[in-house]
Image 1 (cartoon, rainbow, N blue to C red):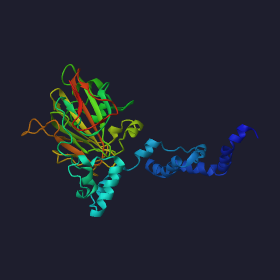
Image 2 (cartoon, helix red, strand yellow):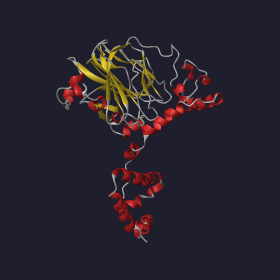
Image 3 (tube, rainbow, N blue to C red):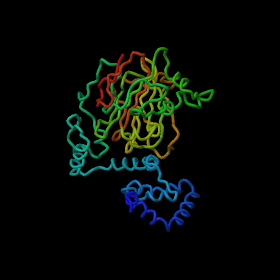
Image 4 (cartoon, rainbow, N blue to C red):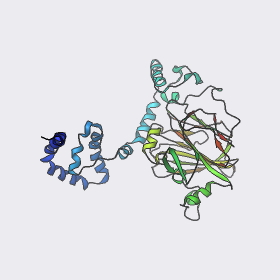
Length: 374
């Protein structure tokens, strides 16, 4: 036997093993192809999981009879992350016995590197459940707010990306972009427009950049599970509108952000828009796995990861009323909202061309530290 045949020995044996059932497999796959898409996904999913888990491509010979595995991205998207996050939220509300709190929280602290010396309450027995521990407050002087720069970090986290928005595409991580219009939605609610919304990049950008000579800028901050989970106002501005996008709750860690294009547009998010001294300003809180709860302190009507909202839609709420024509004024550093566990904050705003970020991609940052200034 020649060396090439010897190397092909395992493949030949696999082919012989599949020789007799090939006709039955083809017939079965033909039946699968006639099934509805939901039923087909249900029947293909277990086989696909085995395909990726078993070593050395043990199920690869099935491709000879026409079977193709679902892609890893499609497989991950099919996981019911909203339902799982809802269940995790219920579990977080369960009160832990007094004797169990220290072991459970100590394991979390060790796993994610939490600095409890910064917490307003360091005694682990004080936190009745995981939800209270996740949303722990800091000591008053733990995060001094920088007064020299016009925009500060709204939270603790890691800088994934920042810079000027070009061609209405924003980078979620280096080399992976998403559409600005898909992320924010139309500038004006569709029902209020006398004509169909603009679809060109230039038209949408002109709705955001309100002053001549200004540019659009963005900054993406990833909050890890061990970070401080509250977020604050990054500057002095007025919030006039809230848009809630129900969606998936996929992981938003940097590795996943490189893997799934427009991840931030798929996930549930809350977009706050308004104005600051240089024009348009927005802060978006993006949900993630086990982060079904996004809370905005001044917005009691907001309910995230709720079964009554379906994915693919959005709902608007205006803070500008007949009695309040300005909206909600926010001071730099003021408490704005909180996550359950960890997630992502995206800032998109207009500013003069000489605006400079004081950042490096990948750096760790804490709430109150400078993002940039003029």
